Image (cartoon, rainbow, N blue to C red; front, side, top):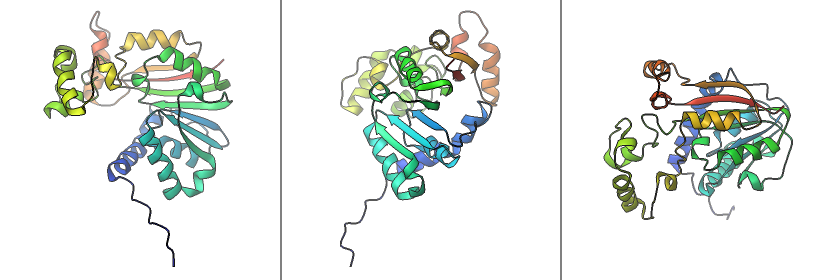
Length: 257
């Protein structure tokens, strides 16, 4: 008789989020020109979250996939989900709750970052750390968004408070009102949206940081979407002075020379 305690089930909310990420991965790759050949490659995913992109790359034949994230709860889920539902991939996939600066320098063939750079407070430094761990000729595939000045650049902070999405509300509602209301719900002091994990960078900031990073920029495309509103934004973003308010996302491929 097996007397081992039964494993606690994975949180259904985390499972749903993982599954949503898995559904979104093909769109991530398609907006970057298609999934590269991953057979036998060593890959690192920065801001791996629940781990869906790591699983995706391992399924595509990557020899080693390392997912890093600073959220311990998400890493715990990713590790448990890997062991329970993808044991055949476990020898090739690993998850770490660690800052990339604390990861031993390696020789990764490629790196990914999906909807993470907008939460990185010192993006130039993180790009330097990624550069140091990527082999010469290796590529970084990144999706960034929603950007701070876009209609919902607050990542639904106000929607969670008011139950409705108000475009650009985080830019015209006084910060102190939103932050105090969020404080009451979260129970922790907040001085800025940065305390909620948003770096508040706008399109021109990303363009400057990326082009000064030392990477060769092979692909740099704002507003990657077929949605009619985003297509309209692609026209409006060229307006002087207000263009940054119409950049919803940014996709790029960077190569280490």
